[in-house]
Image (cartoon, rainbow, N blue to C red):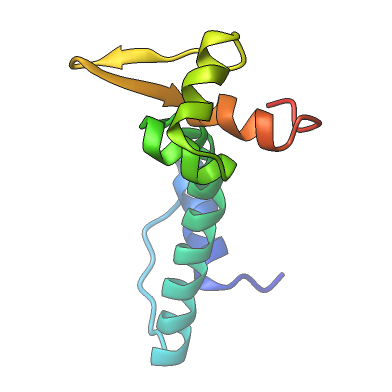
Amino acid sequence: MKLNLFDLLQASALDPDSPNILLNVHLSDLHQLVVDTIEATRERLLPLYMEAEQDRSITKKEVAERLGVCETTVYNMTKDGRLHPFKVNGSTRYSLREVNSIINPSNDD
């Protein structure tokens, strides 16, 4: 079985009894290790980032821009219950997730 450096390091990290070994590594293999590590990290972090982005709060102006309406319409949407603002340090904010659900109603996050 042939393992690349990334797989070898992953396997040894999971096995507390893995032996210490000395390796001679070509620069191309070291480069590939860095590329594989970055890709694996991106695969783990991207979903977390996307989820955090959905939970971000935005201003009334940003809501208006995203919905393509004026701020008065945002006020009216708030008044009729389609949007639910909240305060952050005295500033009115809206949930990006809620705004996106208005844009894409079938996207039930």
